[in-house]
Image (cartoon, rainbow, N blue to C red; front, side):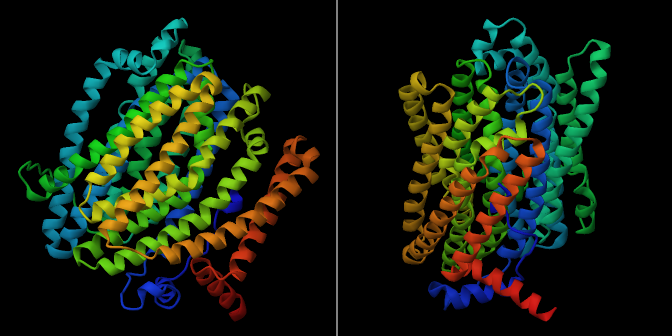
Length: 555
């Protein structure tokens, strides 16, 4: 997948402004903050590090536990705090907090701004401690509801409950981390909060693996060590951001004012956003329930495959979304709709340029990638085939999933949060219908197929509604960009198929041979794709290549 990751190079803010003014016909009469490319590159590099470490973590899981009883239990147990993490920390809370905090930072005094941050941190801490305690006592009922078929296998439900109770405090650490990230992003600091997730993976990998070898001596399953490692990682993800937060001027105060207008505004924004995101979590709940009813290992295959898809989603979709949200919030505060249109169109073009070829690569190279990363220890060749099939189906919706990460913040900035809510609940109905129609034939693969289909439908719905709410944006500019991307992707796909055939022996050989073959295929394909887009003059890519060429000339 590294074929689609950008290098460490990032464009200067002035370059991105120049791009928008010179290349995009829509932006001749508007101004852009000019920060998205640089910020997204910074975040992308950090997220790439985190995702790579995450893959290493999953490799350890695959080698130690394979795909089956133990890892199925861990995935379901981790999904419970993770569902709430997605619902509060990285979704509604993050978007609502950045929107309000940006307005305070622009319109209020520094003292008022920092008081808001302290008040939100204190409120979230108390609220989530209460939620965690309630979930701890009702973990058994929640697991039975989420994966009822686990009870058919002796000890599986009990292990899942135990792991759930251990990992629940992760929700507190990660939610506080999201608030701190919002403060740092608003202050123009993107790299530290983005790299913080790497410390989560390091903590859970090193701490969890160490404990996995120690705890069996004391009568505890090795997987319990990995669960405790998750808590260590969550604590580190929060802790590594605190020095940067201190440098921005924040000083903690034990302030709790529930009637504070800023806090109430954040909670008001969170309500529709939370309702909308709850639909996504309901879909995950539904998918987990269906997966638990399939063959043993299905939960694991789906999780391993989706972890791979999350790499390009994180590096491209999430990175651009994080970088774009403060820009959109400020443009919305200034009521500069023209600038918002330019930001949206240019960001979507960049997302397509990065994720469409990623889709082709993940589909064509699914088996070699899974084999190299996971097929070690307890992870068998059968697991590779099952996971690769799942990966192909997830990859179909990759570009839509990443684009939605760009579209939803635009609705938050416009204070039109009801539309993502509507889209999310439509997705529930569509998801259930597709799974019901296909699960008997495709088993766990039906869930991956349904996920991609719902993401595609969500994308179309949000694009249409946003077009109406922004009173139009340049479809022609976006279409021209997509045509260029499509041509380059076809050429890339042809080269991938050719090189995969030529290097088939190495792709099934030793680890060294597999690594060398994949690297060569990836490098050649990425180079071809970049050259073609450069020749086709895709503006969002050309600004980066021109700057890079000019630096080489100066040297």
